[in-house]
Each structure stands twice: as C-alpha cells, then as structure tokens.
Length: 305
Image (cartoon, rainbow, N blue to C red):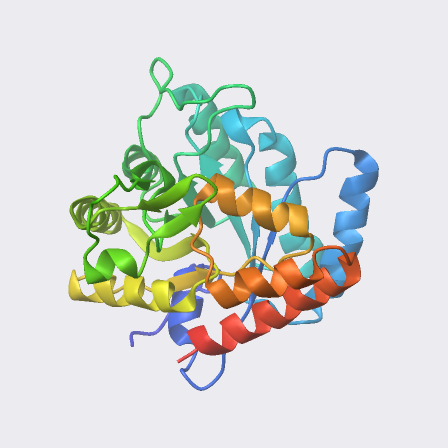
C-alpha cells in the first residue's frame, strides 16, 4: 500500500485499511445530549472510553441540522481534548444549501476530516421525508457536493442496510413465495412478514455503488441482529464490485422496550434465538443489559473473520 501523507493520518478509511486481519478494532457512536449537564457527562464518558482504544468516534447529526453546532463542537472536543479521530455525521434532510456550506466551512476550520454523509430521517412530527427547496434529494447528492466544494479534504463514509433500506422493506402478500436470498433477509413484524425483494435489493446495491464511485471510502451499516444476514450483504457487495471497507453497526441492547421499538422502526431482522433470549428476561432490566452485552460480544466475534 502506498505511504500515507500527513493529511491522510486522520482519515478513517485509511486507518481501517492499515489494520491487519489478525486484530479487530472498535469505534463508538455518540448522540448529542439535550442539556449542558448531559454534554459534560458525555465528555467524562468519552474520556473513560478513550482508554479502550477506539479507532474513531462517530457523532450524530440531528434531523434538519437541529444539533449542528453541538455535533461539530463535540467532534472538535473529541479531537482536541482527547486525541480521538472524529467522524461527523452530516444529513441533508430539510437542509438548505447554505446550511451545508456552513457545515463544510466550520468542519474545515476545526480540522474535522471525516464525514458520514446521510440523507437523514424526517424531522420529528413529519412522517415522510421531503426535499427542501434548493436542498438535496439523497445522500448521493450530498457526496457529490462535498467533493465539489472541498475536493479530497474529507474522507466520506456512507450508510448501508443489510436487510435493505426500511422504505424498501415491504409486506409480503399472502401466497407469495420468497426466494432463498429473500428468506435470508426477511423481517417478521407484529403484522406479518416483510422483505426487500431481490429486485429492490439489486437496486440498493446499484445505488450504493454510485455513492462509492462518487467518492465514498467506507461503509457503515444500519444496526442489525442477524450476523448471517450481514455477511450475506457483504458478499453481495463484493460480488457487485464494492470493495471499500464495510463496518458492521452493532448496537448493544440496553432495554427491552428499546429493543422492540428500534426493531419495529428500522424493520430489523431478529433471529428466533435472539428474540427468545430477550423475551425470557424482559422483566429484569439488569438481565436485559447483560443479555445485550452477551449478544454484542457474540456478534462482534462472528463478524470478525
């Protein structure tokens, strides 16, 4: 591999590629707190978690840029106070071009070299996502704009979905037979079975490849609980010619309510043994957390191959 320049040392895709297959690495994702006390508590926790040696830390971006100033401030503090490498989320939901320009300007000023480019979720209270005037319609638009405005200053990460994007996961009609690949990623929800069809899944791969070709250097997946589904997704990406690093999104369960709520919201495939494990301890918060740690550990071991 070519020698890295001084500008590359803090770019996450290069750091990932430098890691050997003999030793795993970890990264943490943080959500901007809603209060000043919450921010200070997060900084204390970030300092403690630094001792675990994360390769980088993610900081999320609120819908419509609602946490933009705090997100950039947390990334700045993570790098300057703790020597961590920050990966700043940037969404384009309800984000006019001027606000994106401001985010690019401030990120460059603060020397934040890594961005996770996302379309983002609808703002609270709005069910469906709608582009704003002079805004962006998808993450691909944002990636192209980042490259246009900032050249290679930023290392860009993008999102992907092992089961398919939630908007592509649709209810299976009665009597419809699933293919073997569809069976491997179908999702059972309260009102039936849902799946991202083979046709839609192929279009998902096509779109992901466009994001890579536009300048993305790394992929981070949506949370998942079925490692076999994740590995099948990775294989599908490789067969399609997507060769950049793919980082598994492992979200440890901390409460039974959260487990059920997030699974429904994200249309996440839950293996039978995982569902039964949490069902058996749902009335004991401590046991739920212990089960979440156990599952996170087992998933991490299985994804590292």
